[in-house]
Amino acid sequence: MARAMYQMRFPGENVSHLTMQQLRGREGSRIRSLYRRLSEEFKVPWKGREYNPDDFEDATSINQALSAAHVCLYGAVHSVIVALGCSPALGFVHMGHERSFVYDIADLYKAEVTIPIAFQVASEVEGDVGATTRRRVRDAFLDGRIMERVARDVRRLLLNSDDSVDGLDEIDFDTMLLWDERDSAVRFGVSYGREYDASITVEVENNGSLVGV
Image 1: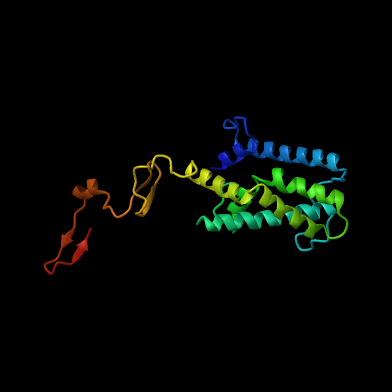
Image 2: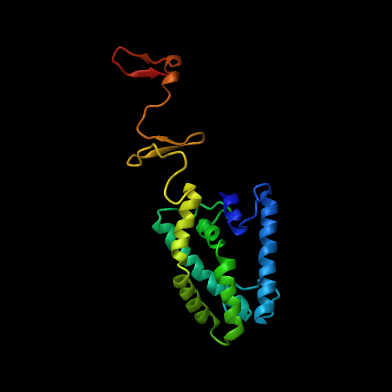
């Protein structure tokens, strides 16, 4: 799953042979290169991602814009994940946070949506950068149908396709399933392990109660 998420950030390039450490390095290089390019394009000074999570105003205009844009993206992604019945906490790239999966999915769209918007706003606006950024991100979500894309990408990542689970087409999904590491899922409500019955001995007292297995 984590590899699939990284692969989405490098379309047309096979990164399946790279280790997770190499993938993280490639992603870091990609984002740093994007920052430098947008800094030159919009004439916005860039010295790195520096901000105070406890004080929004304690940051440069571009860092304020990035924070505001990313928060909007996190909120939108969170709502889609919950609407699809998924857990926001069960991440694959990020771990140990109640919104790990939110961060996993949001990272797929930052380079395309929120980072360019932040640099554009920082180059145009003086004063309330946060409010302007939030409005721009909202408009981008509507114009680019980002919410629909998030829903489609989450399904594709979790189900290996938009609508079905690979290898489970023959199973009736009106019933609950049990996870299996070899078969992906097996039927619920089945008494498994009959092949072990002959090796199990149950002693019964005269009154019918079990005394040992």
